[in-house]
Length: 485
Ligand code: FAD
Ligand code: MLT
Ligand code: ZN
Image (tube, rainbow, N blue to C red; front, top):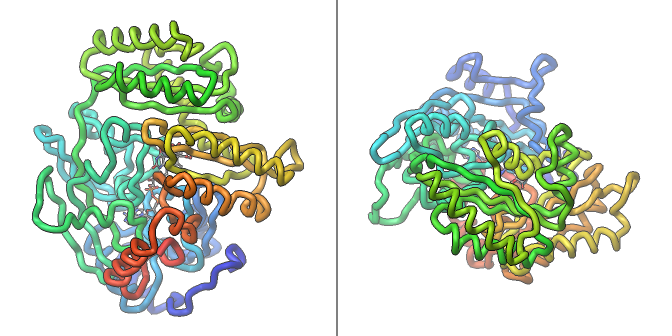
């Protein structure tokens, strides 16, 4: 491929013929088939959110029923046609787009809420329901989706399950491995496996759904999700704080867990460069604080009694400010201010790629080492002579993320994607993480970007078991090829 000179198209996969198209057209309606031509531009499906990865698929299928998905996969398996499952295409590791001419199977038309039980709070929905729509639906019934992330307006419920997305509330509500109660999955041979359970406890053998949570479209298509939602909090508070060192970020974190305990629902940190970048996108917004500081913290609390939460937060803030651990801060006084404070955190992904592109590293590290990776990366890029004003290709490396989960987002904002930058960063970043016994992917997955780097976080025995599972359930390897397995 012109886009990926380092990978070869696998000759085992069939190139689409007119017979194949006729078959798909015979089982699908006109709206369910998008065929690349001069009239129809498929770049929305071929290109990823970062505009870093781009495939050349000529066919997107958007089936409206599970049965049709089953027929499509059964056919592709028999004919050895490679398939890329796609949700909202907001993934950040190049997993959701084809590498060559793979058929794109979009879940976008499988988008109905199936059932909601207002007593247990269990939601059952199609995989293609947009996360924000699922959340709005349960919010009306006084529940809330246990997961929230910046891509909520586009990503699918099935997509977040397929990537095991973490997001902003994991600290409080845990990972999808705990809240997903059941799945419906179509296997590569077309078999529909229905395990849409609504039980929190079920110890009858292997917990098979776990295999698909975080499988990134490599062993089955998730078509239905059963998930435990949480009671909608009656009161939210957000405060935006300044601290002078990453050590102080950690001190505030420990204190927040101790003193805000059950009402703490998010603890995010942002370095100063990330906020300067965010400012360039939030032109009309005034920065929440008067001065610049090395680090900022966003704390969200949520609970069932506003007075109780307010007084708890106030006591906490008074004490950390008196001690000088926090040097400045604001608390949102109403819903608009609350949303505005969140923007300074949620705008970072967009802002960090606004100069032309971004190299993203999403890692787990011991908290004490979390920020040292950002400093080490900036030093390395400077040594390589890559950072500075234009025409230097790198704007700078920034750090932010989910402190509560030990998860750093290291973003290298660049003016263009180029091999010199990539060589300076990889495997450097992965080696750094591995030396601290962290994970080279805390939440975004491996996809295409990190397919060669799984060994930095998994043992040879684990990798063998992953390959065996893949070979067993997808013997023709049609699902999401060229990615991590
Ligand atoms: P896609 O991007 O379409 O697909 C992602 C992967 O899952 C691909 O490998 C694809 O093949 C597979 N897949 C999708 N749907 C299915 C299905 N139904 N069955 C089988 N496989 C499927 N991630 C976090 O963890 N935390 C965050 O805080 C976070 N914030 C983000 C903020 C922004 C602005 C953006 C753009 C992304 C963010 N992400 C975050 C990345 C995250 O991975 C995605 O947003 C989301 O999880 C992917 O959902 P999607 O529906 O867009 O899936
Ligand atoms: C986030 O926490 O903002 C996301 O994981 C997205 C990103 O890092 O770009
Ligand atoms: Zn994140």
